[in-house]
Length: 128
Image (cartoon, one colour):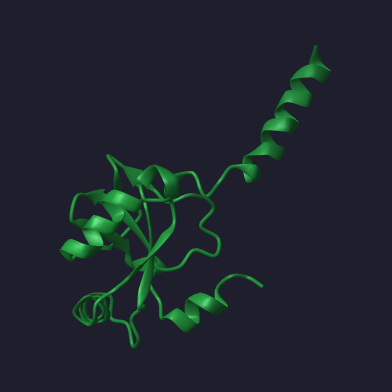
């Protein structure tokens, strides 16, 4: 009996690091810190509505890039972001995540500031 309890405890301690470190999400929104709400162009919103795939990339307009640069205090804003639903990001590892966005309501996305960086920084952030 003692050995089975010890075995269970050891498994729980060992399994804890195996859980994903996904985004903190509450009610379909980012809950892990500062985020920026970005209004999409009608074309961007249509692409997400009609061709959505988790982690799909979306090109940003110059105005959207300027908004991100200012709001997130970035020297260089990303030119593209990766869009997913909150549930997609909550269950996925964020170890090397960059420029991710949550599609939380039609026509708008939410971008966690913590993961925003230039395209070059994002390219170098993949842990390779």
